[in-house]
Image (cartoon, rainbow, N blue to C red; front, side):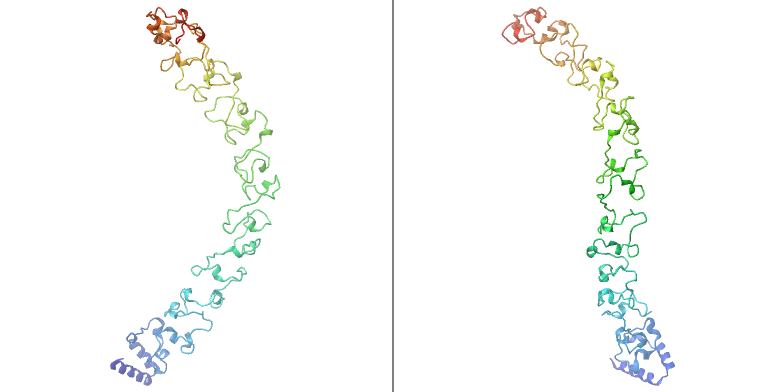
Length: 421
């Protein structure tokens, strides 16, 4: 301290000794305390000098809160006996504007367990309706958010859920809960309270609707098939949505009572127009694979259904013909097709040959089966291109146009020579 400051401090001391209390108060307002390195702010501005500078001693007056706010120095605002045990400075929690109003406590420097402060005296403690436990507060609560609780159920005893889950301490059964005396953990788990998993093992057959009534648990929807049968007649506990219906008791011809497109699958928009009952073609074992009895179909009317839309029709490469499907195909075996040639010009070759062997136009046509129509209806009408003059002593095709009548037979055993044909 320089000499001027020493003289200034001495002068202040003398003034304090000689002046009255009122004079001291006046001096408080005139002296710039910031020059001492400790600016008076907040409530410090309204206290008299001797509150801190006791017995007129200026030198060594504490500048830290704890230096003054100790028991005996400033009794009116000292640390109470029940103060939280902490090594924090006062200003960590208190302010100079209002000492009794405390900021959020920095728990990192708090000493002792939670309950040492949260005891309803020093700080908010366990409420009267708190679940009974010996675990420390920090097991569930956090200093960042006290009311958002995270509870570890690892120490919870099986079957004791209702001790806490009673509607007071924690969430419990709702008003719409299934009536049961089972403990919570029979269906619920601590990892996921909802959805619950229920074991149907002890449920008596035919009693499904006791719970599955649309209120307690899922029941029949508005579009359900009208039935008085019990749920487990069709549904199972392993797969509720995948139901299986036993058609044994269904009267033949009454399929459309359910299979009407609303209650159950019905005719599609592209279905064959018919007044027959579903079971005329379909079966309960395989709905999609339908079998149609063609016995009552009028011959020559196949294309009424076999038109490519209602049912399979002619493919794009089919032989061009106006004949009816049943001229070649049968209802027992659609493929292969078999055609009986009624024309007197058709020669039975004694072996199976393909249609395209004769019907060579594109697309194949029944109207023109001759590759060399000039020689029709003789063999040369098809075999003129197979004729080799040298093999026939240079005779013309026209003179030998009837191959079979001249030399060749249709069977291999009757060849004209031992050569190729």
